[in-house]
Each structure stands twice: as C-alpha cells, then as structure tokens.
Image (cartoon, rainbow over all chains, first blue to last red; front, top):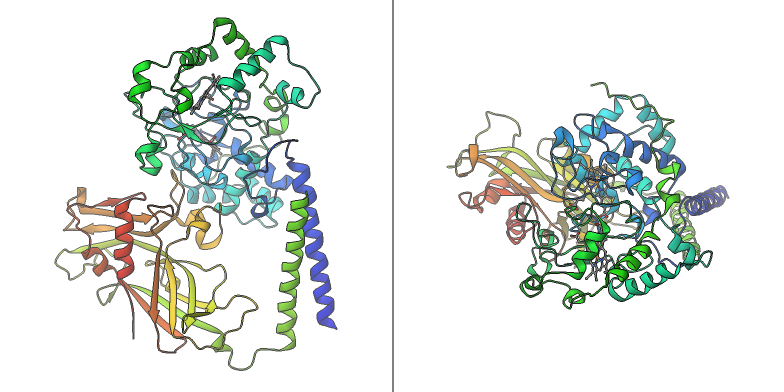
Length: 351
Length: 248
C-alpha cells in the first residue's frame, strides 16, 4: 500500500514538473510561425527565467576574461546585431587582434554547428572558445568558476537558477546558452509581410524577386541561411590565409568554405564576410556581380551557383538593397530583455 | 506541440518505470549477497611495473630515455561485463576520468543500471578508452565530463580522451617537452578505442595502463605535440589501448 502511494506521488510530481517545463519553455521561447523545428535540444537544458537572467549576466560580465576587461558583449553588442560593431577583425584582451570578424548572434537555436568554420558542435560549448582564446578573453573555465565563487552575486544567481549555489562549468555554459537561445529575430518588415500584416513597396518586391533568383539557394528563407559551408569565391587574404572549413575537416573539398551567414539585420551587422573585408552592402553586391573570372576557374571549391556571373543593373542593385533592408528587426535590436542587465551590479572578483 | 506531448508521455512512462523499479526494490530487499551486484574495477597507470608519481620532481624512470610524466589523465567509459558474449552488467552514466595524480580516481565501483539484475557471473569486461561521439555532441555535461576538468578542447569541440604530458630525453622538442592530447570523435579521425579483457570470475578486476610501453611506441624525434584530431592521433590512440593489460 505504502509503495503504491509513493509511486503515485512520484508520478504526480514528475507530471507537474514536466508540465511546468512545457509551459515555461513555451513562454520563454516560441518557434515563429512557419519556421522549422529548432536544432537545439531543450530537454537537456530546459529554459527558465532565472537561468536566462544568469546567462545574460554572464554574457555582459567581463569576469569571464583574464584581465576583467572583456565581456562577450565587447565583441557582440546588441545595437550591431550582436557583432563587433564596425570592427573587421575582433580584438580582445590587451587589444590583441583576432583573425575573424565576429558574426551576428541570432536564431542560434536553429544552428547545429558554430563558428565560421563549424569548429564548435554545440551551442553550450561555444562560450569555451572565446573564454580560452588568448587573444579574446585569455581565461580558462576552471578559473572563471573559482572567480565567480568568490563573489557574492554569483552564488545567489546560481542558487536562484539551479536550486543550490554550486557553480560548475556545466551550469555556467548552459546558462550562457539559454541567454543566446532567446535571441530570436523574427519581427522584421519581411516577417510582417509574410504574415500578411504589411506589404512590400514596389521596389522591395522587385528586390525580393531578384533575391529569390540569385541569393536564396544559400541565404534560404526564413532564416536566410541554408546552414551549409560554401565558397562564395572571395580571394584569400594573403596575411590571414584563412582556409575556412578545411581547418576543421582537413578535407581538400572544404577548402575556402565558410558558414553561410544569415542576412537578417544585415543593415546593422557590418562589416561583412569572415574577415570583415566589405564595409557596405553596396560593396557586397558589387563583389557578387564582379567575381573575378580567374577566381572562377582557379577556385575548385567555388559554389556552382556562382560559377556563372550574376548580372544586376544599378537599378536592380538598389531594389535588392531595399529588400535586404526589410530584414532589419528593430524589436530585436532594441529589446531591453537582451540588453545590459541594469539590475545587476557586477563586482570585481576578490582573489 | 504534439511532439512535446509525446515527449511528455515518454517522460511519464519513464517515471512510471523508475517508480516501478523502486517498488520492486522495496518489496524484495536484496539478499545478503549484495556484493555480487557490483564489481570493483581498478585502472592503475603504471610506468613499467612501477606506479606513476605525478609532480614528483625526483621521479625518474629507469628507462633509457629518462622520462618524466607531469600529467596523465584519461577517460574510461561505457563499462560492461559480459557472459558468453552477452552483456550482463552495464553501468548507467558510465564516464570516469582517471587522473594519475589522484589515486582515488583509480578505483571504481561499478553498479548495474537501475532495475537491471546481475548475479555476479561474468567472463569478460569491456570498456571504452575515450568519449563516444553521441556524448561528444550533446553539449555541456556534469561530473567527470564537466569542462572544468580540463579534458575538453575549447577552440574546437570534443573531449580529449587521453592527455599525457612530460619530458623525455628522447624528445627533441624545446626543453624535451612532449604533450600528447589524443581525441576526436568524428570520422575519419574517430579516436575512441574499445578494450575487452577475459576475466576469471572475481568481483575485483585490476587493469594497468603501462605508460612506458605507450611512450615507447612513439617516435619522439618526430612527434612531440598532438593537440587536435588527426590520422596520427587515431593511430596513437590505438597504441595507447594496446598498453592496457589485465593483472591476473
């Protein structure tokens, strides 16, 4: 009899917990209408308001860097769609310059691998890379955990998020991942048009047609990326010598391939490409219509879509640009839930 | 939404199963032969026949190359006992970081998965050296898999299966230092090794990882540093696996 009661209670508790998980996850993260299922496995890291808030604090806190000066937000600032505003190559601690341009952070729940070469296999593990990179934050996760333990704020935030104040690498990474997961951009004019709440101007509509013809196989709607690695023909920068995906797979067929980036909020995420070589959208369009012929023939991994020239008149370039600007999502860019957490006073860790 | 409800039903039935297991245990308390339901497995890093002393500057092996070991850590995972080729004991969440600097990490008590029964009879033990690919792509983990244990690559995802660092006169690198970080979960550079040893029935098994034998298989004039997945890392992982032996 006693066994039965225990069993029933257990069932009920799990039932309630599971239901709570469902409602909270749904309230904190919704899949926009018509989008595919996210790649992230939320069951292994169920969202909660407290964990997201902890992740947000961590994202904005320079405690993650060796010298206490660099936070994730230093290179991923909200007003520039979480890129390193106006920096071709990111710089980290002691002003050391990195080798790549910081990509925009949004809709990461739909992405399976991360970094421009796909070196990172899970969003949880992403934060380890900048924390440990000597020219970014120059730290290590073990030391970050020790520093946080020595503060008064973090044991409290971890207790609120995880039920006890124990700080581990796993909890730290999962909290940062939760904050990044809720960075969903789905409220651009483009989205309103798709939801039939707005209409394109004639110019935007022409631009959309051109986009679907020339760009959409790689920058595929609604995420504006096909999540593949492709070579879009950029000549190799002779100082950086970045071979892209090849450095991860060692497969010659992956040479010079980079992750196809989203074009959402492209108006704000300049400069463009893996090394930030183009400052303006007009530079990008000029590039796509003028991929040098010798580059087409010499470059064995060049995507087949770009092996024949894209021809756009100057009017068409204006139309296409008008369309690209409909991907700007001001609700996302100015959402105060994603900005610096003013309610938290960061302290410098006592060591 | 529908998918989520299905997931919920599964969750419910898992809870159901777990609760059932619990009530079983309550109704039929385990008999006196409790020890038969677990086995003790010791994985001991050695240098030849001698135990390894990490961080002891006086430690010098009596090998021709005068080898020091400053760090030796490796993962043992998916531990199973078999009887006539059939798995009779399988540990849940079977991930163990063995650290030559921490003796307590050598001695494992292996319990069967919850609900599964084990009568203590087996004729072989099997385990992985390293972390499998499914676990390697599942995000942040706790316990011995927590990245604060220093066994996770940062700039490129994946666990380091075997980490061995030190000095050897045979090594032609700067300060004679060698650093072998072996790992990689993706083809063609999957470094995971499966080891299997026949055992004469006993609930205490001792297996040695002879690092002298492992290092002797590496040409340190040519190789000093392994820091990422590669064909050489796969080859060397196999050499590491060959350097495990069961103590009769």
